[in-house]
Image (cartoon, rainbow, N blue to C red; front, side, top):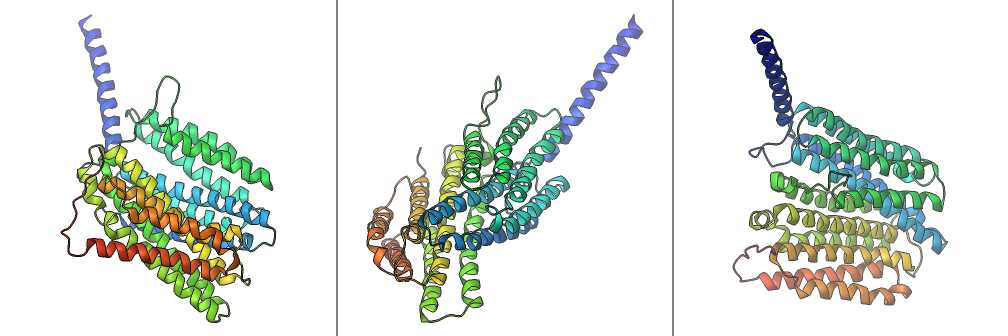
Length: 420
């Protein structure tokens, strides 16, 4: 009896030791509290593919905006938004991956390299995503997004996070059905399939990937790697600003140009510079300190990420507007063009106002007035050229930048005071 009991205890002990060893290996994959918060070189390498994907979205949207049919121009705007959502969602989930898992681990770096390759292939498929190459875009997008949490689930073994990543995988598979379905659909049906897919993706993440009997997951990555994610979101915004210069510079240098297009190039650069200035004065500059002062870093971080997403969408939309200026041959600004040329800066200002509230628990009147001026100008721009419309948007941004400078002049540095 005593021999049998000893054998049983030995088996139980070995099982416990094996389970503990497996858990230890899983914990080794996770980011530690003392890990470096700066982006690694492999993350910056991934960002290069994001620049390419943004550039392809901007360039690929242009023919649709120049279409003679107004309905086609508006439809093209919807398609462009969906492609931007897909590119930004892959970037966001990749940033969260390196926020939770140690970026120096070989496994994490392999996933980043595969994500870089996927982003590059998606970028090559963007111009034809709604013209026969949608299946390539969708399959690559779905494959990399489903494969990553599935592999992570296996690597986590018995860790408590394993269930979360199985739930994420299940929701991504569901959204993937609609992405792939849209890839084989044509016309308006493709737009509907991919719109539903985007809703499933964003909605499931917002709800915490709920599952029967398991409830919802509360995202805590910002508590673990808040400064890393602040840095990454600011880098994404800088990528979008850089792409704006890249896009208009390529258009100007590869086509014959005249005084109109030269003026458009100058306005595009001035607008990009003003967007950069308005972002960093002062909320963007004080974002890391605001994170340290936030009472709920996880909730605060989620809202900061959303504000940056709005600003990035606004910047890329503004870049498309400047492409329209470079290629337009009319002296009128069509409604869809106005929505792009003026809507981009307006969307940026909405996101910037939200960021200001998250940093200082206030929204300055300058942001509200700027949004109101852009909205008020929209109906008046129908009878003027796209260049005049873009110049109007730049003038509003210049006014805000000057008022920001005047308001800060001679005053001591502000201290962040996040709401709550």
